[in-house]
Length: 384
Image (cartoon, rainbow, N blue to C red; front, side, top):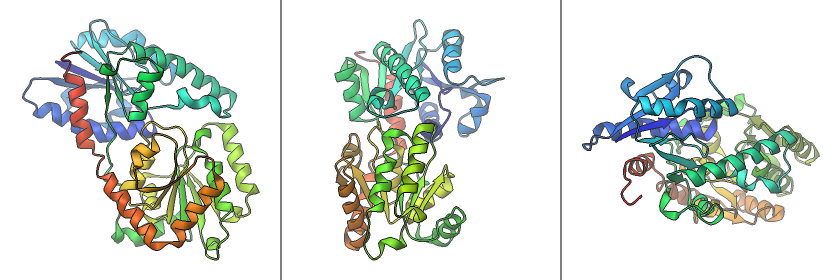
């Protein structure tokens, strides 16, 4: 069986992380298998750096201008059937929820973005709202027509089955893995301190992170931080790591910071490097994750793997991903969020216990396991 993975949609954030971590392991899995299955990656030449461990014969690189956004989708519809036919592909896997079909080729998609299905209850800019409406319509159509779908959590799986009417036999739940670069490292303390100082972190801090989008509820974290009034609270910064493309929400966050009684201690760090992000996880007193729409959030797995003391909300799939390793509160309960942040800060025994539980829970997420299960999803079509 010949498998073609269409990597053209892997352009930023979690999609790039998924490809970087999974591709080398999946390539090795196919190379070492004795069943004769073959794997190829279709990518733009600019993406070749994301596939450093694969053999050249497994790469099919597109030259020239890189199609992006809707232009990419149009390009795929015009060209993918021809490419799949020329490569004699039996299975076409696009690790996204919209992907091209090719006659006579099994199509595998992935539900990894719940935003188009849940964004209606949030205030987006006109442009982003329009984009999400289009994505919802196109995603629902593509997912219903796919031969198989990889859901990255039970929550995403239930959405496919209960809301979109997808046959449960066509869905495989496969969690993302744990990136080894996010881990506790006491020896890196001096290096971390210098790196964080360079971006404006000059004292102990609370961390919240992720792309700044309305469903991430960063304003709730800012509001809860402003209600911390204990004697040691004035020594703590709030660091917000992440950037966003929704201008309306960006203005709301700026206004919320300016209105906070603790605004002088709030650092909006914007997008930071992987190295800085790892240091932020390792050194924060508390990591607060208040997001309300996720499929399998990388920030949750990264925070657990880094041994953070985590405060989270109760919106799925967070309880599924975290299980019992966080202090959980109701979404949008500002007082509850502040109270749990305060408990983590003031109770060292509780904080240490949460850190241990986070590390233990993170061990359940493995890119090796993800690669093995993805291999099975791509090559095993018995009964389907």
